[in-house]
Image (tube, rainbow, N blue to C red; front, side, top):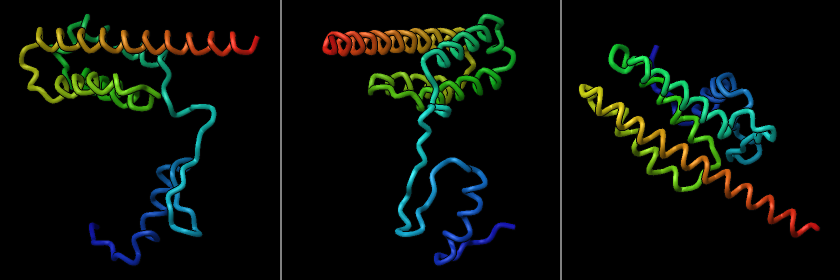
Length: 150
């Protein structure tokens, strides 16, 4: 049953639920009630560019099968997942316009299927371009470091 949580009991009420939902996630330190975050050094939660590229291919396949015309909900769900994955990337501010484009597609009334497909292709091309730019920058940094460590 829904009931208000008393102010002095919020921590005690929500902490067990939070730990159950996010066993390896953020937690409150007992000493100062400040938020501490566990860091996953292996990057198990963050997506990499290859994951994003695979998701792009999966969504493109849905558009090629005209699933956006018959089951927009399924396509919409996959685009939402893509957006969430992109938010886990260590990306620059260049991703912000792309996220805005995704929002426009997701929250528009998708009655014009051709328009939706054009928007998707623009989003897909922008993401791929951004991922390729990120790879180039990463490659240049590695080669610069290698030349400094000769």
